[in-house]
Image (cartoon, rainbow, N blue to C red; front, side, top):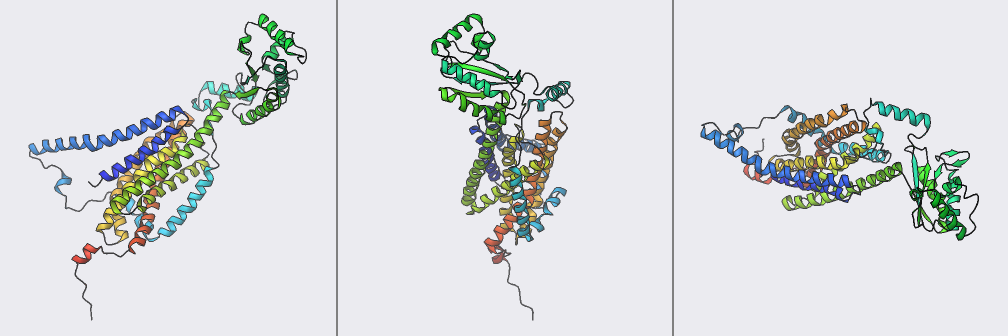
Length: 478
């Protein structure tokens, strides 16, 4: 009855957060969202059915043996003991309550700085990042890349579609290859770009020495090449409606300038001949994936925050006629998320396939923290005479539990800092930071928001109506 409502809301908002990955263009992250959401629902079902059933059976067994059911149950009316973690959490109550404006101002400045830092986050992905740091293979790859410019046979392929075997098509391919000679990052030999294509093979076979005059000549050249080169299908389709140009390149992972230069060259040389062309390579594909990943995560974060805000606002309006409580809970999560992104930029942690999950983690961890604090504060405020006392009780009990939960989870993910693979180290660091900052926001920013909300709602008039009726009026002295 007391924790169940918070668990339901936390489950719904966390599932919404993970399910936004369903719109992600990357199939593995779609699967991650689905399985994480299913895991959250399963955990909720287990904790609200199986665990209580086991506890009930254990209590019945204890009663049969003549023992007291539980110390907690036998001392319902006794004052609750405050743990050391609870006292630590409660120490933030005076600051957040008495100086809520200052706390929110400082949080606002840090949030703005975090937002600016988030725009400076680099997006990186490299297969070599997943090599152990002491790997001999990694050392070899780095030496080859530094000394031989580009590594192991780096190839950028351009797919050309259209009537490539016509005279105009072959001349356009020749113009493209000549233009590629001047593109930075394209390997050259004897003043010519190193390209494997139908034009290059015609030249090597001694069949092509200059521009093609007409379509009849073009057809004869291609037919003669097919007879002499049985592997021609590797660069030209049998129907002659598509061709590949394989360019030897040496740009490594910095492929965006090369991709842009090749796109411009396609527009200048191939498109006037009625041909279309598109460049592709492993690194170009990775660059596109990371751009989509970044965009989808930003979109997913916004959608999740808005959806969670609507859900919580409706829930708190139904329960307390206070929709603003839902907005406050989500606002604290947004603040923590901005802090995380800014700290990533400050520490130089890039946005990659693992750290990209920071938004889902921020929602999955921060929203339940906020829900539990808000729920407990509403209950405590209805029973306590003033905001400070209610906030101190909230942080002593719910806050202490959150501190314990956060510390154990930080320790669990923190061990990844010692992993031998850099992306796993970064993921462990970012996750630990996310949990820690979500906790800090829940103990400082959220209480300050709640204190300000309560002050505006009640003027911090200390005694609730029920207690006013029960207590006698004070007798004036003198």
